[in-house]
Amino acid sequence: MEVLTRKHYADIVDSWIGKGNIIALTGSRRVGKSFILKDFIQRHKEEPDANMIFIDKEKKAFKDIKNKDDLDKWIEARFVPDKHNYILLDEVQEIERFEESICNWYTEESTDVIITGSNSKTLSGDLATLIAGRHVEVRVHPLTYAEFLEFHDLPDSDDSLMTYLTYGGLPGLRKVGLDSDEQVWAYLTSVFNTIVLKDIVERHDIRNIPFLNNLIAFYADTTGKLTSANSIAKYMKSQQQNVSTNLILLYRGFLAEAFLIDVVPRYDIHGKKIFESNEKVYWDDLGLRNLKAEGGMDAYIEKVMENAVYKHLCFLGYEVKVGVLNAGEVDFVCTKPGKTVYVQVSYVIAEESTRKREFGPLEKIHDNHPKYVISATPLLTSRDENGIIHLSLRKFFMEGI
Image 1 (cartoon, rainbow, N blue to C red):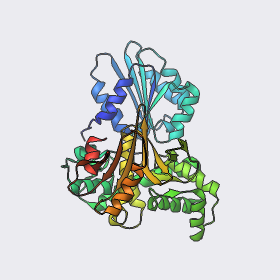
Image 2 (cartoon, rainbow, N blue to C red):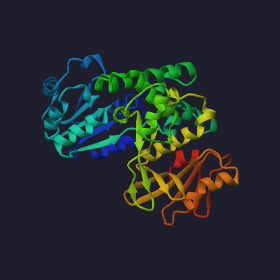
Image 3 (tube, rainbow, N blue to C red):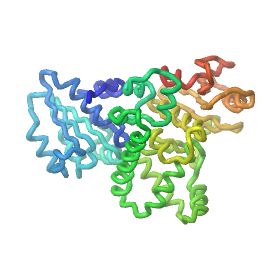
Image 4 (tube, one colour):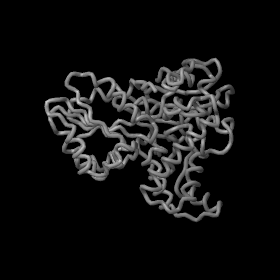
């Protein structure tokens, strides 16, 4: 199958070539990291001095590369000193002590190292310790709505948007196709089971599988709601499962390390401080979230919309927190160097009571940072309401903020 260029990531990777940093692509399994590497090879292999050294640890051909020594032997046999060597290592966490090897190779003349991994601690903790910040981490997200349209050759329409919100943005769905609902959910089930087994259960030697499954289902059903370890413990007790808050926090950390979920803290807008309890959880991929949630889309459309907006804000490069005011809550406080924006998300704003609920908290923030309400209100594209931009969900996905 043709490898489509995800221009956003291609541009980022290319911008770091030749600058003496290991480039680490992180994100959950099946999110498209391997294809970003393959696309890089296709785009650069014809360069006169290019020498590509590629290892994919999910392929049988590379099963014998198990540790640092195996990796060094493989690279050394293919390394060409008078060429520009590109060392590309896919799912590098499967190789024991990989970090020691790449810390040696990336310092060679005319050498760039690009690695991928499906566990956040493998690529941030170990590498950061050994090379003191000499790596750049690029978080790879599921397809954006615009990428989803391109991958599946779909028009920008309400039907396409609902398909995206339902099935999510895993690139592998392009090969599966969207014609068979049964096949789509079978594919998503396979991906979910692989993530849980390889990146959570096996990696951390999980014993309490029933609780892990219940915790995942809980986070699917409470997406975008404030939760705490204490409240989850009480809920689990009502389900005849007695678990400690420490175990809940431990397992939640494992889910986040595998990029299955993101834990988003609350931020006091006026006090400029982060609260240390009652975070919100959002899912990396909407399809995986919907797979584990109970009820149909009608029951949780607003949760899914909020999750989708959160993910797109992350894709746009914002650090996202949940805003807290004395007068209420702002869904998202979004920051990046030199810019802050506030964002509310609502399904449909048709009544005055809904308008007050969504616009009211933003109106009480007395600063000059941009403020947005994003909704799926019919016929809406964008309008200014007393300095607050009311933006349609589709326009936000296609044009950003």
